[in-house]
Image 1: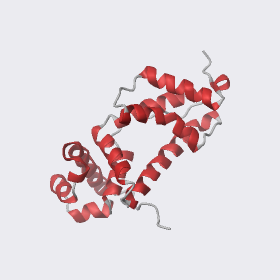
Image 2: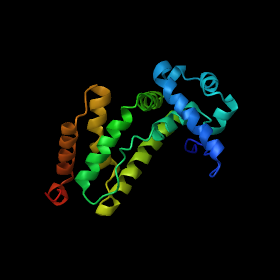
Image 3: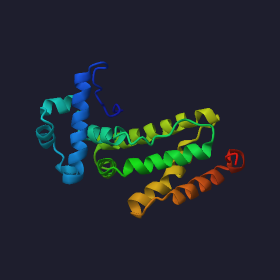
Length: 199
């Protein structure tokens, strides 16, 4: 069995390497919405970021690895929630954070590209699985203070309607829509009575 998508991490404590990595990701975020996934070649990215292609391959041995990092290491929008005891509040804040993240054009384009390539590119397929695993584990960490952990299926039922609205319907995800999704999700879990906030 193939190993998961390999992502080389810069040496911890090496600020120069981290600055280069951050600069390349920022340049890629700028270019991706303009040129699209197929136009974001390592030759173009190296030229625009003023680094060598060898530098790019050291950090991202495959384009799928680069797209993976563009999704998971998006710009800090200051919207990622804190862990909490109220499941409704955590789920609502997490969906708002998801909405904010995919509103960044490069993150949206990278996520769609990884998903589109997953059927025929094993690196993209592994990247897509790992993005899901990262988000699932992160959400359960947010829920730890509540003493509740949800299954992967329950997690999919939470974020699925939001991604469907964004990517399939091409509609707006309003706060009202998010509130309705969370209320339905809690009802589906059969926990709505015990997880209501204490208003």
